[in-house]
Length: 355
Image 1: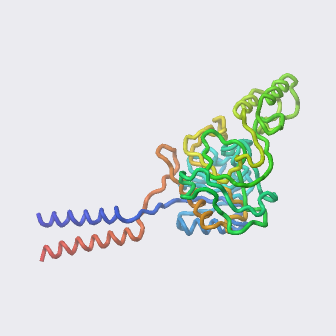
Image 2: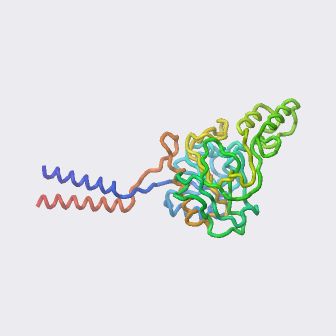
């Protein structure tokens, strides 16, 4: 009976040791960059940071252009990080339908003007080599309660310097799909941008665009309408569907529609039509993040905190999200030490009792 009681306390000690000790997530990250190895612009800094944070064994790098067309390169990973160092065509049509989380630094993959994009907004803006970004180093957190805000709120300095170069910023622009959550605005003044369905090119999808669409149906023009998201000619019902989806959307400088961080959770409504390469709902978590080719090395501590929050959140797959590999909890060294202490204590109890 005494032996049974002693064994019971050994088990209790072990259980408490594992319960008290903190748990670390073994998040597996696949990073895509421009070159065959992480050597281009900021890619080596990002790759090293990911390895330092999640462990070298849990982080892999792959040239974006060599990734499998069906997205299977991400099999076994929890999150894919797409660097802005690549041309958008390197990964377009590869990950838009995956259930695995994606963090995207490449602006041209965010919006809905190409099949194979993530369908988060209806316009985009590559801010490389634009004067509007020079000297700008802050974002405005507009959703501080979201995990992607990393506990920050209001205006946050994300770059240490006031950039004199223009390869610090990527932004999403225009109107957001219904299920997309804005986390932070860019505070940049980048002028106006047209929106999808704006066939008259006046920065608004309104009744005038419908009139032009109907006129184009009747005259069957050989040329495409502006802002038709690649539908081209002849003019058909798809042009009407595009206009109807974006009716009422507008765009202007400093209109609060220039975004630094966006999020879409699993099942949230996107701008796609539900066909392959055009998701109508998010099959996995999606994050757009603002850092361009040279920005990562210049991030402040808060900027790095926001980046880490993006990777962590995208990697956490909610129940029922599909085949994405859930991040598994593994004991930290401290936990193992506590467990060993508990075991030795239990053995000591048994030995004293036996004596």
